[in-house]
Image 1 (cartoon, rainbow, N blue to C red):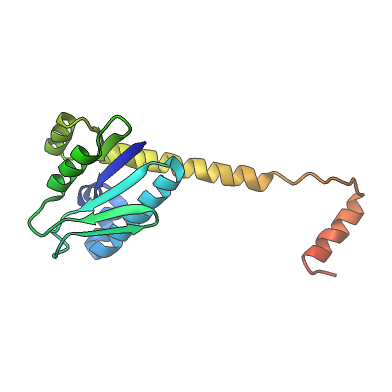
Image 2: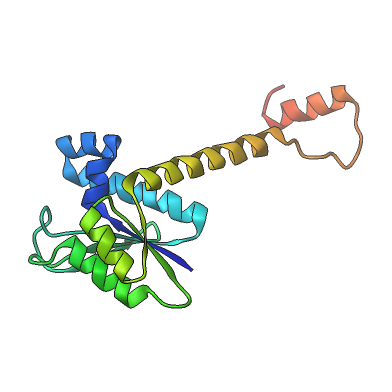
Length: 169
């Protein structure tokens, strides 16, 4: 199974849409990132964990699960990098390939040493946009396909049935 661990505030700072939201309301930027990662998860099937450090959210460690995405807020004195490194150590095994989404070069080098692979913020953004385009394409294909009629009927009869179905006289 692929596991992607996302450095939340690093990605928020790297993506233009989230950066603009952050300037207005950090909570909205976090929520939008989580929503986007939920879409990514539903399309790829990968396990997604988003880590936020206590720099912007004071308090004790908190783990949540929203939209099938795991969200971790670190302890007040713990950085997201430290939490990510612990997660990589815990999750990396023969069955799991762990990817860490961050553009922090020092963090990338550390996670490489622990056996994980990295995705830069830009790479993750491109993957997200590609998956959104694939979803749109599937929706378009689905709406263009008309169901096959089992009993051949004249066009005028089909039009009458369609009017009835739509509640028109």
